[in-house]
Length: 173
Image (cartoon, rainbow, N blue to C red; front, side, top):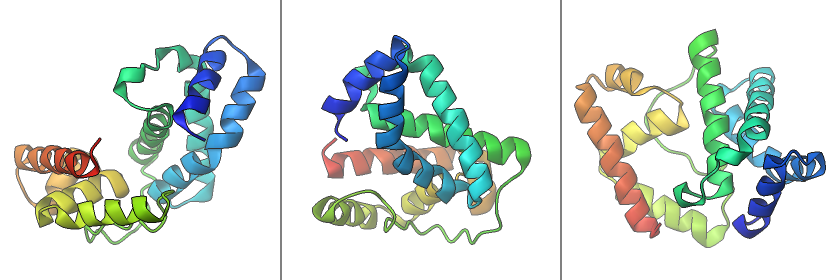
């Protein structure tokens, strides 16, 4: 579902319209569930994080600002923070290999978009790619990335910031 379709639904949700919320959930829950499941690696925790995310979306739909990104991006960030909360507060982080490689095979993108994203990721410096992978695909905090990479916190934050800027530039966002 595109921004033009999600925006009116979110507006209706902000006014407490349950039918709009049900439609929004129907069209976005698979995507959000994939995000939190990838981070948590446990279905039960992912379901809980997803439920928490939709409670936040219901309660704070009026806080969405169009200038800060798409509705779906806003919703993904809420879901991602709920998953991070689960990791931090429940120590639910699964045992996983932290090789720093980014896998976009599960990304909900179509052919050319996925190829473009893959190329943009490949064009990043190794350090930027690794730091972004650990932070965004493995759900580590900046402090945890710093410890994993054995690098200063400021350096890690710079790699992530520059890497994200390079991705945005490459993707023309």
